[in-house]
Length: 245
Image (cartoon, rainbow, N blue to C red; front, top):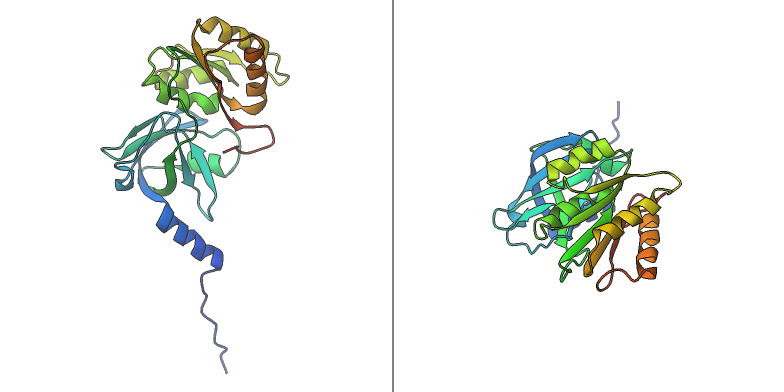
């Protein structure tokens, strides 16, 4: 019986591009440890020679490559050691999606590729009093900034106050003020009042997290003439969108 030769499979153009970008532009890291302070959060420590000597400041980001293709998810390192080549990120894995699936499945020994670190939110020249507003996606930024601003004041809108408190205690942010988020945003009046009470005469405001909440808080702060210098604003997500970075 005559046999038909099967042509050799060749990598697709997309596969070749993915490998080229990964090899030439991304840094390789290994996951050292994973902790779960809450079912929806993962504290992930990573290490790699490629991280040594990198410039990093609180507010900078890394973009972690997910499996298959060049899709990435953005994270704010809570700490970064350019001498040892180590960093830690806090992944908020609420709901379903590629980023949440990856974070829940992260395990020590896995090798990942990433872009960065690189600039995302300029936190230079903050006033002596700094107030950070945000939500669960903002915990990492606040933890990173707390290392340089010990007097940092944080106000977060959260889905569950007790669960958020456990995570924040793990990060050393036990003094953060928490307001339970409501679907109709009725909680934002209380949130704004809490932000006002946290401020001093000279205060820098850093607004992060959910885009509609940031817009409302920013309008109110500007209307009331609060804050020293420009508002530092970085929306991380908006309803109906997986990410804004």
